Length: 307
Image 1 (tube, rainbow, N blue to C red):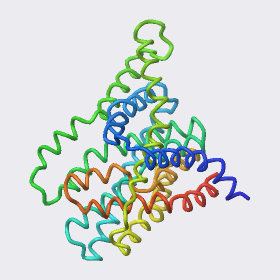
Image 2: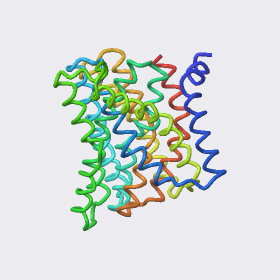
Image 3: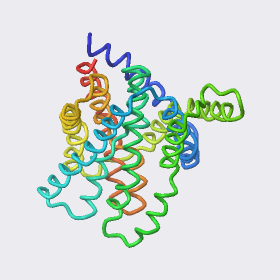
Image 4: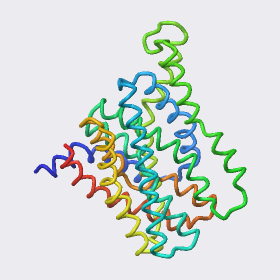
């Protein structure tokens, strides 16, 4: 009954929205690149900016959550490197493995799951984790995916053109400047409320996009390596996250959020990086689909423990 309660209360609302996106994509030809850009360049940055301005987390705790996010990403990356060496993977396969194990779906999947599981306080902490993951993805995923490729300079320029970093900078500037944007009644306050309106649309669209992307249907290219990656991403990563959270002395809520976020399946946008730099894109797409489906079971069990 406890397991069923965890599934119904937390994951079922997420599944309803994801399934709606899946069904919509199967029924209609939708312009997924444009929807992805809408999420990436408008709604996502608005969510990051407004949450940083309004977030109710102390500076010390926020820094420890961010440090945990970075440590999980790097730590599981080291485990991935060791695994790749033991399996004697060639360069493109090693790059694909690292993309799949280091970068989790802490946005599309993790943010709404954290909100349903732990409420607004948990969501705010999950967003801190997600922001750190976004920056890590933009700084590390490009050189990993482009290992052995020649066009690294243009990839770095593309990385710096991504808006999430600037949304973080603007949010911090507004927060520490003393300007109380949420409660102002002038043009600045109205502009902030417009950004907040866009932020409210971010989470539903992220889940719909996840369902649409899963609807593309991707075969599993390498069953053995996929199983290894799924074990690292869904099994080893949360254990590592628990140890890191304990070492950083995170409080109970922050610890549970960090472990939950670290348990998410492979990030969908890793498929884009793998396509861009030919790092076994079909394999990466298959891992995204497999880990997302398996996460319904692993997250149900984990939520039973965490809650």
